[in-house]
Image (cartoon, rainbow, N blue to C red):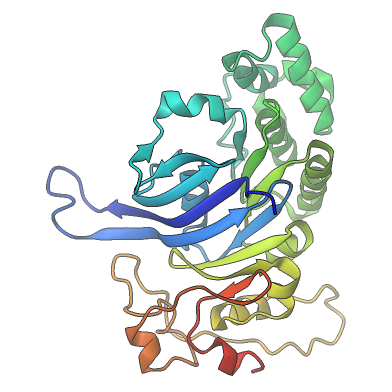
Amino acid sequence: MSNPLVEVKDLKKHFSLGKGPFAKKNGRVVKAVDGVTFQINSGECFGLVGESGSGKSTTGRCILNLIRPTSGKVYFDGKPIFDSEEGVALNRREMLPLRKDMQIIFQDPYASLDPRMTVGEIVEEGIKKHGIAQGKQASELACDFLELCGLERATAKRYPSEFSGGQKQRIGIARALALSPRFVVADEPLSALDVSIQSQVLNLMSELKEKLNLTYLYISHDLKTVEYFCDKVGVLYLGTLMETGTTEETMTNPLHPYTKALFSAVPPDDPTAEDNTERIKLIGEIPSATNMPSGCKFHTRCPYATDKCAQQEPMLVCTGGSHFVACHRWNEIKDL
């Protein structure tokens, strides 16, 4: 079995509230990511899903070292980017060689492109920074990637404000791919786009995955696109991984009560067809990330919770193959 390209183990990112020297002493922290573990093999697309505020984007940024983790381990191609046990934390200069291999497609194409730069300058910037090409050769290479992403070469001479949201996201994809990365974090790349063009961008990402042998971490609220695009999926709740496995087995046979509720909300492909899916309505509000519940973080909203759930936090356990779930009662409720 080959080694994973990306390996995340017990990753935590806690943000202290307040400012100044006493911020950490007041004890109030937001546990944005709280002990996440998963791995992504080369050529795979791993989907990360969950409600807003579950820690999806923070996880992606910690993997890329855009945000420094609090503790845990992040390894890329067997080499440590961050390892709190070994005292490894690559700084900005040490990360530079890895930036060619690890890129990000941002959520908002309107805010992620510098309006003062031409499209060509935006895509060329990384090419020149990493010494891949300079001058006319860099410009030609930038045009090649714009063309690969379905844009005309003349696009390079224009400014971002002249393009639609879908076209801007294609520019963002071209910028990310211009360095020929091996791993790309796609942070909700469709959420700011019209429904009519979401499928075009998703199909483009899928084609480029096959053509360039890309590995993705795909962060999304849209479970239908995850089902279509991803090989594996992880379900986050309050910064903790509730369930993970292949997309097919996790979506057809969810084991965690939160996963069951999340997937039951997915509308049918055909809105006119009879839908016999039982909708699971969760009770209560999502707890505050500054005041986490004891035991299982989901027990305050779980219809199957017991005293044990409130007292003891469940660990991720293998239920067969590559399917893992963090629930004390998964075997009792799997057929409910």
